[in-house]
Length: 499
Image (cartoon, rainbow, N blue to C red; front, side):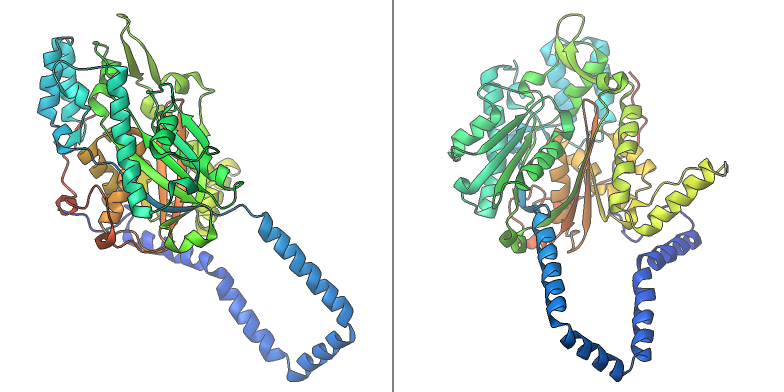
């Protein structure tokens, strides 16, 4: 079964919807509506003699006119040269693990029981989580944790990280054919696995990257680290001419397994799955023609100054000194608050003038005239075609669908990524974009909004513009292509989990 894009996307009565769309188009095209008649009237009033008279005046004042023109050209050129360099996304690749690493929900529960470390209550709780997770039967688990007994070690964690990172990078280099010596910036993010030498050093060693490469390794930044890496790469590209930036987003599960009975820590065992993505960015104007997307905006929101936000996702020890990542009951409210701050800042950058006017009018009515009206939620669907929301869990996706008034069609990439691959942490946004490409949804000029949440607590956004229409038939190494016709699938709605 599928979702139709032409359904009523905002849930409003059709009459209200069309009135609002008419207002949006009127405001958006106001310049043309007023400028064209003005030029027409001015041209009709001016005669040929007027133009001849102006021409003669210019000949009499040739030197001042020349100086004025030269100054204008110089200032314009100086302004253009001072503009930040444009950042393009040449291509990206998502790693698709071997089928032998697939973990059905039943096998996961059986494997948990075989460890002998969980109580009956904990096993029952894990079963509830899996039933309500929105996961399918083909997510991928760590090889060392699938086996009985589990092999949890630094060596196995390195093997797992190598498999994920190098698998994604190999696919990306095959797609872009960029020489590794041309890559001047490397950013690798992995939240819970931070070995020495670093993961970024592992990449440099494997691909023999050049000695003066600007290398960064981000750890402990949660699921939103992928967009933090993109933002960092963008800032470096804006000051380093003619450069390529390789961004690698992944998460390692091997050393992140929790073997205790604290419910708040058991959730991460059930939800995190294997995945990795590699992204190649460029600031070379000559690369625009072959790039897929242009980076329009990045926006980072950090709520770590608030204790509730800081503590809602925390790696710590339980009462029996077992290390795990605890998720607080405050997670959804904290995520909602961070999202509100993020979109309040992003809105003026991307929303059309019509939405800004409606928002301002609502604000004046409530604050100045004390009118009892509901706060106006801007319609981001007028500015964004594709919403790619971190597939962290059903609860977060449900809240964003409701708060942003998104349709089933808009939420499909996130929900299907959660179903097929699970929560792959910072790389999930790229599996979602790959889904859109495999479905043939990306058209030239489309705008995409990536939204990610992470410990700290952070909400980060990136807005892209498609530079060309993506033809699924020409896509290589897309993790969805051999099964894209099987999606979307129906995922039954269930109640949220209380722990």
